[in-house]
Image 1: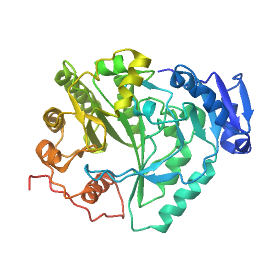
Image 2: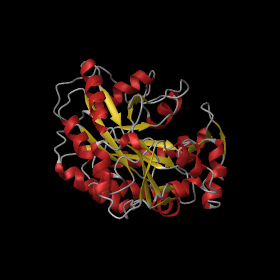
Image 3: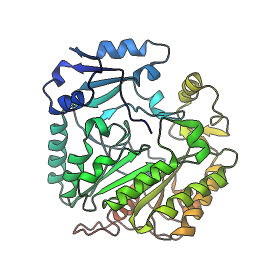
Amino acid sequence: MRYFRPERVYIEKSALEDRLTGEILSRLPGIPREIVEDAAGVISETRSESDPFTSGKKKLLLRRKKGDFLKPFPLIPEYLSCHFQILHLGTGCDLECTYCILQSYLTNPLITVFTNFDDILAELAGRLDAAPGQFFRVGTGELIDSLSLDHLTEWSVPLVRFFAGRENAVLEFKTKSDNVQNLGKADPRGRVIVSWSMNTEEIQRREEFKTATLEERVAAARKCERWGYRTGFHLDPLIHAEGWKNGYRKTVDLIFRNLNPSRIAWISLGALRFMPSLKKTAENRFGRTGIFAGEFIPGLDGKKRYFKPIRRKMYEYVCGLIREYSAEVPVYLCMESRELWEDSLEVALDDSVHLKGYLDQAAIRNTPSNFRNSGTCSTNRS
């Protein structure tokens, strides 16, 4: 895949003295740059364009973040949440997926990197040291791809080294890129998981632009496995399109033919869901993709979702494919009800806290660790 190279860089004046700012600029020789007192004007100007997100993906904004970097994943009482912590390194994604929720969520369309990286590490150290008995699963891939900008930021190396020395935390990088070369420079000591969002080959080719191919993602995962990382996979969003069964069978086969199941931390499953406003935005940007033409109903979180029988059928089928290869790899549903967990995965959970224990155990599965979480989870129907 081709790695991101912006057409122009904007630097807020307050970020000029940050070490990361200088490092990124040194890796972008010849790219026009502009220092601004406040990026609000650039953001407003870009938002006024006919397609602000396409325009914003050509620009890089370097600015300092105010406030907390580590925040809990929002809880929705009606669905089981996996209780992880989001580490905010920036916002916006240089990749292009037709179904990307960021199109209807972000108000800043520019690819934005927070440059006060030393503050990030200091906050992490303070939070983890203050709660030695609490286990933290930290992820960076919610509002920005974890690794697609790593050739510019190289933030993966200090983050791996930081988490390698922590007993009460693991870090998960989530990506659709194959930009993993920097990960070979640091020993994760079992505390870092590198995961990839996966779909069918047809969906990847038709709906996921600028991303690594499925084969490239798996090849990158093999490298990470050799370097001592554990891997993860997120079959999310599962899309109920023609030929979906054969498509997901090929994807699951690709994963397990190439990777060691004992080194896979987890595989998540999540059916396509989206805010109602996303359909119009996506169709304006990409034309009629077809993926929003299925049978959808309003979910309890306000998002459009497939009818429950469709979701159940997809979860049962894909989980069955995984179980053909491994009975041990933890599988979980993303933002679903207890009922669907029990019906589709035959996993009985009491609540989101129970799910946290299940995933905390998965996070240190087959990994030397002195930390032991008390959470348990039955894998049989209750």
